[in-house]
Image 1 (cartoon, each protein chain N blue to C red):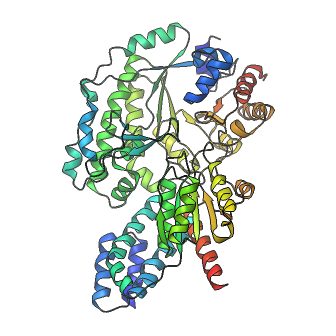
Image 2 (image 1 turned 180 degrees about the vertical axis):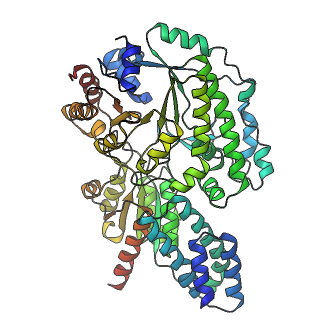
Image 3 (image 1 turned 135 degrees about the horizontal axis):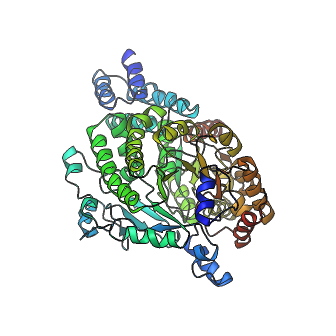
Length: 354
Length: 215
């Protein structure tokens, strides 16, 4: 099988020949890989199966226009403002992490939300996407459209979790408006990726915490599930073969049936500290596939290389010959993960014999 | 007392406006603010905490009830000062150095407030020195530390070590929490308590502080 055939067959649970290697490194570990392995581009060095296609390019989108939303409490010096107007404050102690500030946190009226200058994806430029997809596929790689933080997180980052949850609980029209607006914008981005021919569209919204779901099934189904389904339906109308990956951190078991109904194909990351992969696979493994399962709170930072390998092999055994598991560390690998464990993960994938 | 029970019930349902109106009505009718606080607002939050712990309700339900509690508290606070109401205890809490995540920590702060504590929230990226200095300054009973990242959870130990160094370890109840935290880790660094959720944290702290004050 070519890389593309192997990848698609693995995720469609139709068997596979090789186990693809995939992970994301924090800037510190990227530097470690450069120094220790001479890996200038770690995705190339480790032969990752996919490459990202750039999102739509916004026209004349000067994020300075969002600064006035922080007049009450100005952003810290050196803070960045992203394309949604969300402020990211840095700390010398926290490396690549930032503290998020929410431009619509203090909005009191629907009008304030309506008048907010949302990024104008309708007039954004997507002319680069088809060409990028073609080049990626020419290299026998999978073309990936990455647009996690699709609905709920995107709205929460602008409004703040507390305000948005309270709006939802009070059935406030502000929540209705914001979710519709974000869905409309995500829809434009998703359709553009689909039309450009990506193989995988990676959606996501965190709806799990470490031990429980973040909100009730009822609240999820009222507010978020129908909007996610709407996007997936529209994308699949363009390309029924597209694989929809969906990310949520934490424990999401009670919401998995809803995600399946919404149309997802692959669930990421199945945090081993929060859910038992074997149990999840038994319940849902004939309906969806999985990406992740190797714990970044436990075995990746704290295990021995042998323990990392055993975790990889154990989970591949659970999934069996037809596949359905794209085994990978559950999250970005942070500075405390030893390089030996990253190498052990990659070696375990390559050495695995069914 | 019907009105006090009603306040508790409306708070449990997250009826912010109704709680505000009824707390005002109870004040106008001459109820002792301590009764409105303890048997109305805090008793309601205690039910909410129990439900949250048992996973019958989730974060949004707690947030909306906490909001109802806060509007009630805003009315009561000046009156509580007048009658010299004493809180259950004081807690200083924050997210540890290097970590900027505060959703969990904020939820813990709400539950502590709902259990009758005075909460001094130190925010995020809090150094060991700040935890100890503030705890000393305000005369805290409890130091609460939060971390989301396996990268930063190690910094919890620094605060405990600094307390030991200054001979203050026995003075404070040290509690920790956050996604990657486990009881095993709490034992390893010598924290007094780890709890898996915000409601249990407040409940455990209240029990310990009351025991400590009684002894």
